Length: 446
Image (cartoon, rainbow, N blue to C red):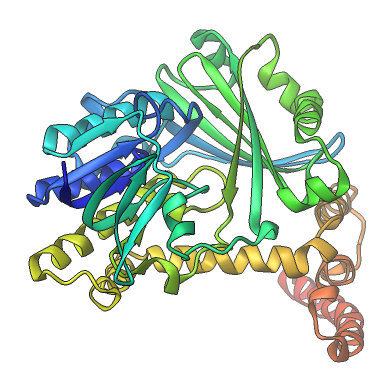
């Protein structure tokens, strides 16, 4: 094989989506995977949001290796002994099958097989070590001592992307990297469903903050598989390294929290996993393409916090395929021709999602680390105070929560010149609001 029209490096969700889309358009496509089979190098479980895959493979639910339909979601704050949670179920989403849990090892193999069925050539056990440059353009990839030339190379080779780094498109900022460690804990299906209050085949996803992770600006996730739960914890890589924090130890602390312990009681450890993600902060719209090369999936930073990286990765792969197909049709593989990738991404809303993720990431890095730790504890105390005032039937100072919220949480985010005036305004507002409220009550009672 001397040369093909397109080489896609990496048979994860983004690479397989790209190869599948290209093959359907009649583009000669080779999909390269370093594992002996797709999914071999990624054993993680994940949550699949389905709209993108619905568009790509209608009816996939009848054949894809899915674990549970996610019917319920829960956001929770864990104090040392406290719990504040919001759990919801939207029946319309459940009826549509909006989200499922699955294992990457099984899903990736199935998805790469669909690309192969469409006409892409899948080569496994192939490690790309470098790109080929020719006349200032990426002209293929090196596989050890061998070469595979192509009109376009699509880098879908994950966060440690060889293609992106060799093409000069990836610049690392260690402050934006998160390390996630995860345990797969076995539970019998009937125990799992009773404990989480689920019908047969249904599942739940938790996102938790607070206990054991607040000082590292981390988060905890938990979601249910057929006969297990996936419990994961995330922390910023640079903080973990600088402070010598063992994230696995923090995960054990989370498991010892009374609430979490009640959810995983009696579960047996099946697997332990670790993975690094870039929380949106690495993504740069100007560095997703160059002469003869495109990046998609994690290689291009197309992931957001926690568990929603797969659908953006798939969608970016589909848009990369559209861009590559248009370039093949014109015979133009320059950066100018491939810049059409950006407007295609904009039409999907992906750029908005990633911009928001990058903005949030930079806020946490530049501002949140100094000011946010302790805020959640303040919030819980404020909520507890409001509840206690109500149930003790006292005549509390109205809007005291506004004062407490400002002093403990918001003040550090306000420009220094405005802090004293705002503090005075809030102090004056409370008695005025109290008088107005009492007057309104008296009028209503007459």
